[in-house]
Length: 161
Image (cartoon, rainbow, N blue to C red; front, side, top):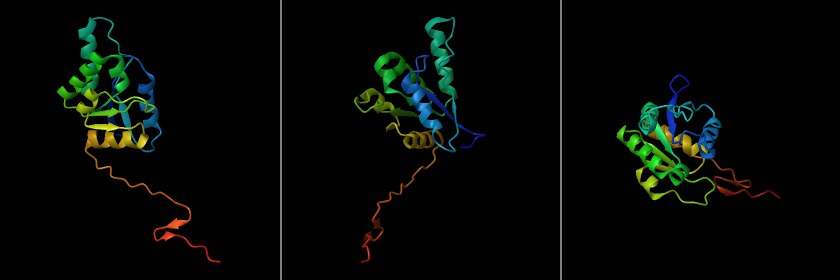
């Protein structure tokens, strides 16, 4: 993944930019040296053709993606649309990543959890790592180093008196 070869991401939407939809991109933008292309286009509402045209537009957007981020908030608001998007992703062999409901007060619907390859928290590192694993098969095993003042790898630091 590089600037010339960004990961193509589709985030579930109902042709509007909801808070959760925008939040995904705020998290992605906060990560240095992570390059992605948003292939979800909420503004591309078909002006004619009815429900069939809407479905075709959504399928076309999903086909461009390497991974699909499923927002539980869309499932809660428009279950049939969310199911359609998950069906389209599955039919096109696009891995799905479910992000838990923002704020931690609600649980992700079981129907979303069961279909997603990963179920993650709202955390920029988790989102990016899940996208790298699902879209490109990249191993993202990273270790965090925590610093505890007054301690080192041998235990508590004794102050000399």
